[in-house]
Amino acid sequence: MTTLALETRQETLSVLLIEDNLVDAKLVARQLQRSSEGLNCRHVSRLGDALQILKAIQFDVILLDLNLEDSSGYETFSRILSAASSTAILVLSGSDDEELAIRTVREGAQDYLVKGFFDGRLLVRSIRYAFERKQSEEALRRSEATVRAIFENSMDAIVIVDGEAAVLEANSAAAQLMGLPREELVRTRLLDFGDEELENVWHHFQNSRRARGRIRIRRGDGAQRLVDYSFNADILPERHLLELRDVTEQQNLEDQLRQSQKMDAVGRLAGGVAHDFNNILGIISGYAELMQMNAVESAQKYRAEKMLAAIEKAALLTKQLLAFGRRQVLSPKLLNVSVVLAELSGMMRVMVGAEIQLSIHQENVGMVHADQGQLEQTILNLAANARDAMPNGGILSIKLENHVSTGSKPQIPAGDYVLLSVADTGIGMDPDTQSRIFEPFFTTKKNGSGLGLSTVYGIVKQSGGHITVESQLGIGSTFKIYLPLVSSAKVEIPSPEGAKPVHPRGNETILLVDDEDELRNATAEYLESCGYRVLKASNGQEAIEIADHFHDKISLLISDIVMPKTNGRGLLGHICKTRPDTCVLVISGYADDAVIRHGIFLETTCFLQKPFTFQLLGSKIRKLLDR
Image 1 (cartoon, rainbow, N blue to C red):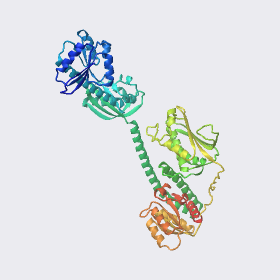
Image 2: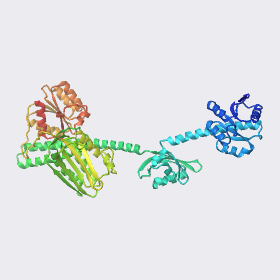
Image 3: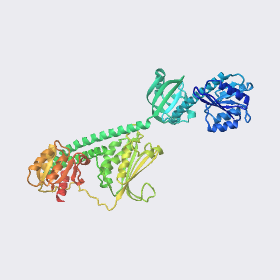
Image 4: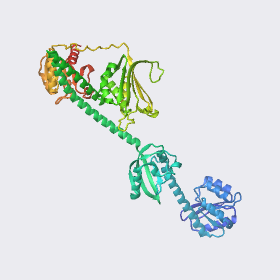
């Protein structure tokens, strides 16, 4: 083994000479010594020795004779290339091996020289050229590897097409987006994944050479996805770059947020309308009840009773409006579902329309513990859902019965239930739709909010119940609600029609505060007729002044919440400090969550929602004063 050290004047290159002919090796060494280039050369004569050295040392250039003692021909080159793939290889070929040398250049060598036909200057220049060419090739390879890694690992779909929109290359994200294997995708045209809208985008791109926007594409399986696109022309001759980002889920979330905000706004509007309407109903109800109390003729009493019945129905409508706006706090109580269903039957017949036959079958069922407003909303939502499933008419069957579960169905634990079934003969659902039917914002309707059935599910679960659905395409759907039966429940039997209302009397002093003048005056008139002393105020500030200057005991404060000047919260805070023995009854045209939203925390027995009957007000007052 011979080491030839040369003086370094420029960039020093390390050279490994693999040559078994010592005459040729000395010739090469002499030619390099005469050069002013900085080269460090190491010589070996056997392939095995070269491979051992290459395991430990990285050379810049290898001068390689193909025919050695222990190897010959292309095999020599192949093994050196495998061992030193990042090193420049300059083949030293005999005149009869020139064809083989050309082959090595095609497959990885940087150049070749024919022995006996080069001098020192050509040799050094060839070494420099081979090194620089290898460096350029390595830089290009690394650059291509970086681009390929970005291309393959991009989360955005990247597609390269020609001038006819034929797909030439696509990354994994593109194949996933289009719903096709990559090898199939590259045999398609971009326009195969869209309609006229995509064709218009492509024509615009061909004219402007750039395009950005949002469009729907059709996957290979027929599903549609919403994508943001960016087209760039001529990244290479007749090669155009397309970047596609799937924003379907993002758009769905944005739509859900807007829908939720819209529903919240509608709910606020519904709550406000219900508040004002309840105040008006309270005035009408108050004077109708006073008319009934003071009527001498039976005809006048009859008219007053009809007015009160109509007001009760109107109050039910506002309750539904408040339930729609989700402005009610859950207030469970013992309920007879038969009574609730009977009260809703008329509304349901109007809601489903004349094309749908409504059939209601009820058994004598037990009591459940639930919120009446929420239960009513549940029944109406299911009825509306059934109506929408029968656009051409059909039969809506509602059945109410007692049910005993043995626990054989895992979703229905063992126990006694009241079973409410809502069945339609509509279009039905496939298994995939059934599996998602109770998900929030999931809907099969074009303009649906996706909140109806999810709200039903939430209400049933809040009430301690269970809900199931059975459906077949083209046959219809059946929703079953299982509400736990309350054992040994005492059912309050309503007073028979025509029975004389009870108006409890008293002699305590009551401070009545309401900004609705007519309702305040009617309520005061009723309370005074029952023997109470009434102090009236139109707002919180006026009530505070009256309470501070009144020297006798005030037994009860009846106050609205939302009032000008000082509101109900400020008034209650003042009364609690100055008159801690005074009982409090809050009245409001809003639902009872208005009490909480205004920072007032009271027992539910201290709240009365407008419109209320004077009989109920009188009973409430006596319970508060007598306890």
